[in-house]
View 1 (cartoon, rainbow, N blue to C red):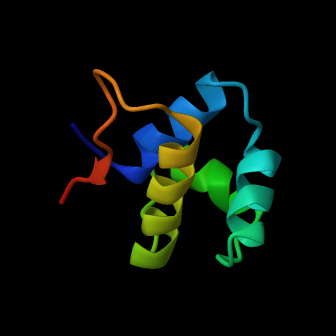
View 2: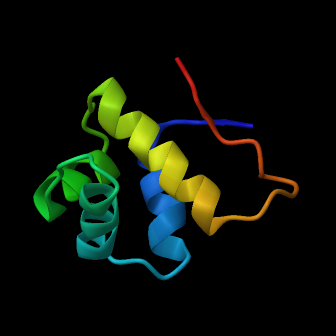
Length: 75
């Protein structure tokens, strides 16, 4: 199932992560991002390809494959 950055952030938050934890996890993975940027993405703001890919990687580590396991950015 294709997802956009906003829906990935929403899923990560629903799984128990805070905006600050998402930002910290992405930064630790090499993609510098702040909590306010995560909040803007959650509210629907666009983001860079790099951040989108980092969100996909984070989601893939948090969610086991299953009925929503195939995470990819939609166009």
